[in-house]
Length: 109
Image (cartoon, rainbow, N blue to C red):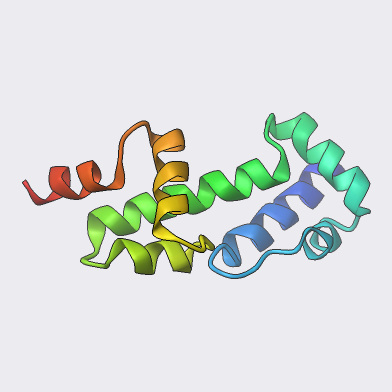
């Protein structure tokens, strides 16, 4: 049961810092474990690697921002750690199955 509490601490840390540069060492400290052990346990319990989880959460928040706010795609991409709108668009499409521009149009109509 203790490992679940540690995992929850780490997830809380991740969620509170999704819009900043996350460091695996800092995340594992929040879980009170080593980097190596944390990554193995995280993957075993969630089915995602730590980087997959962070990327998916950021892209989910980006989708919410696209639908609920009148922000430019480039601003959203930069906020969630993408260096270019193209990289963001490709990652977005891979996760959500459609392009950023389709999401914008669906919301506006």
